Image (cartoon, rainbow, N blue to C red; front, side, top):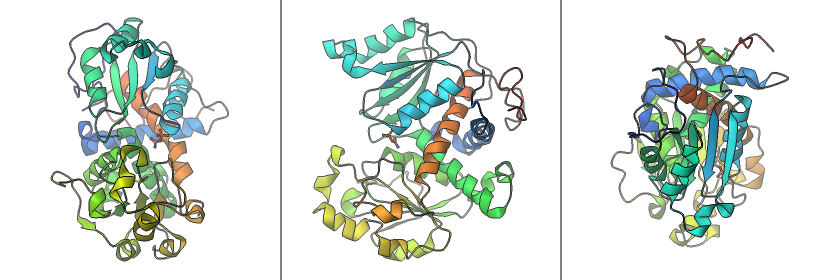
Amino acid sequence: MSFRTPRPETHGIKAPAVAGSGRNLLSIADLGAEGIEEVLRVTDAFVEVARRPIPKVPALRGRTVVTLFAEESTRTRFSFETAAKRLSADVLSFAVASSSLKKGESLRDTVETVAAMGVDAFVVRHPSAGAPAQVARWVDASVINAGDGWHEHPTQALLDCYTIRQVLAERSGRPVADVGMKNFGGLRVAIVGDVAHSRVARSGVLALAALGAEITLVAPGSLLPPSLEGWPVSAVSHDLDSVLPTVDVCYLLRLQTERGAGSFVPSLREYTAGYGLTVRRAGLLAEGALVMHPGPMNRGVEIADEVADLPRSVVLRQVANGVAVRMAVLFLLLGQVVDGDAAGAVDLGPGFGAGDG
Ligand code: CP
């Protein structure tokens, strides 16, 4: 996937479309290391926008973004809607419960109907893996995967990478723009918990590995996928205590009880005893190691209440960065990128240079 090719105007008119052709973000694999780097560098500009008294730019004025969430969400939905509004796009928030899907209309008829009204992008969350890719075959608009079943959650991985990069910059005393992707090389990341049911883990592993991080999965065998073929991880462990002192980032996954994860562990109490980041275990982390979680957190299950609120826990920073990352993704898909290096080539609209405020 490349964001660099200026895309023609599209207004939701149905046309043959191939997912992953450069106009969609369906998987981290669409991006590769170069694409991830481009998103992170463009995000720098939108983090700067977020600090302004009026954090809004006209970059997507006249564009329409639909958020189509067929599964619950707090962070991702509000984050995309905030991002689109800060780019001055019109936002249509599709509520499944009050839509004609409830009368039996198919997903295909629904999205084609909405697309016919003139839509530039669909942000799709769906309980079925592959649903956003299917939507991308039906409409001419751009499609962004906002989480599909156990498959992927690419913008979560991008905001996680951005947050790590931001912390690396702060620790080195350098501006974030000076921290390149090579700084991820050799970064040791433990991804802990319900890997089997986690789209966050799939996208996170792909993104972090593409940037050169060394990833250890830590989980009971029952919460690992049946095969790890194609997972670019360095190691798998069932012993969290031994892994914690060795990592720079401890990334905790939510135990996905709504996907049946509860039946893969003897009890929540035993899961916490083996794999929860308790106060004692947090004490095993190296000084400076980060604690991350995509949210929503099960406090007292995969993460202790007190640990979730430690300074080393960057959960709310992940959320804050999510808006800027999603602004970058929407901008790169729907806006204009001046030829050449995306860093510094972001045209946010008249009178909105990086120094304005
Ligand atoms: N991290 C995440 O996807 O959270 P939501 O389900 O609240 O969107």
